[in-house]
Image (cartoon, rainbow, N blue to C red):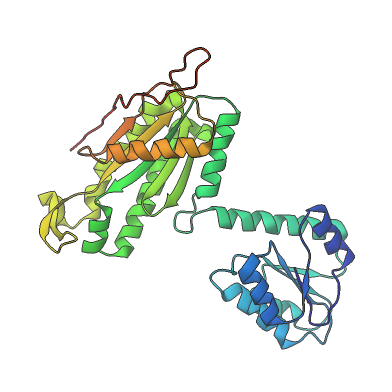
Length: 329
């Protein structure tokens, strides 16, 4: 999208880049129109045309409004400038993500715009608090493993008693625990599996890590063991010594709340066939829910097998699981 108070068209180099990338192009001439379109469709990139000396304050104001809004702020803002004095500084102050001065080569313009979109995608696809890949990248990674036809394990990790911890302490302490868990998962998965391991953050206290199936027990055992060693030190000395604290349930009644534990539900394709990433995610969620019914920090592995008779449709597997449990409590 081009924002141009003068109604100009895109410079040839930028227009060529837009066509080659298959991006839809449109032009708006007012700040209100820009924000209206951005809120409805969230364009891939907005180009602000400030090449001329009579660029109005409306252009700079529109750029500020775009970048300050919580919904449209992730849209990359590119400002085209000429030789006007102070234009570079105004673009920076207005929140521009990229500033292109007319006169640079077409190839440089194309490369800088490509890098801008790459940075933008990375920011959109990662979780803001942990900087781990989010749901879009998690689904894509599962799909990649399926396409490569390799044996993999998808592990869904979730904290137990995290809400009560937040209620007793603070969201600040809760965020610290989330970052601690993110680092633990990353360090163990990457330490054991290297580039073959993947860690993603769904949101809140929910994480996904994907590893070669052969590394399943080593990775999960180390994660729950180290977690149980670290988590007591996220509590006050009094709560840590007691091993619990008193919290209120939804009815306002006091009850004992144990220290946080970690539940991990694991799905592999060693005995089952999955057609879509959604099927894997659904079963991983089921196994995580089962893990949360068990005491302590545990990981549970789905061991059900697809049973298909010759010429018959696949039948649902029997609800039978082999459970691997690590309980350090």
